[in-house]
Amino acid sequence: METALPRDVQDGLDAARRKAELKSNRLRVEVGDLSYRVLRAWPGGFAVDARDGAHLRGLVDLFDGGRHLSRGLIVAAAEEGGERIFEFKRMTEATGSQPADFVRAEDAPAGLLEAP
Image (tube, rainbow, N blue to C red; front, side):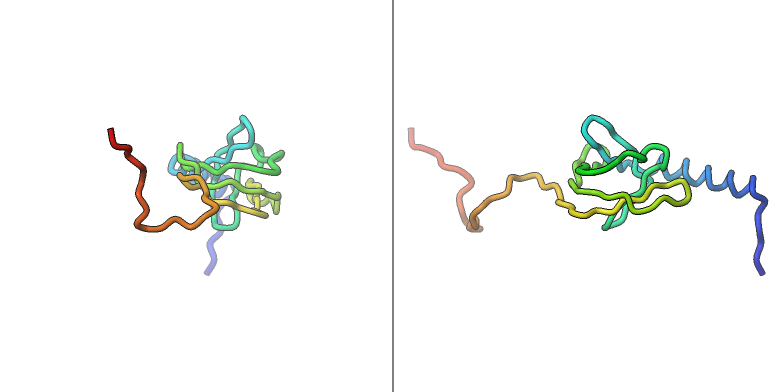
């Protein structure tokens, strides 16, 4: 048995769901000086409001509040249900340290103290 809701009730429920998602979600994507709230994210991409993300392209940074999560190259994949969906062509996880071009020994000293 299927139940169908009237169109205005369904629209109200969808609006309430989006509002609740925006309050609970701290993810945002930055392009240059512009920042856009991410509605939902998954390992291969993310979705933003279709009105906001119409001109997103290229290299973006993904943040969770103030913490930098990753940097990636994106392409617009689709638009459905008021969301613009983007997929990562390439994504690099952000780390707190600089990359090294050599292998560090586990027992290596953290620094060098000179004798006075």
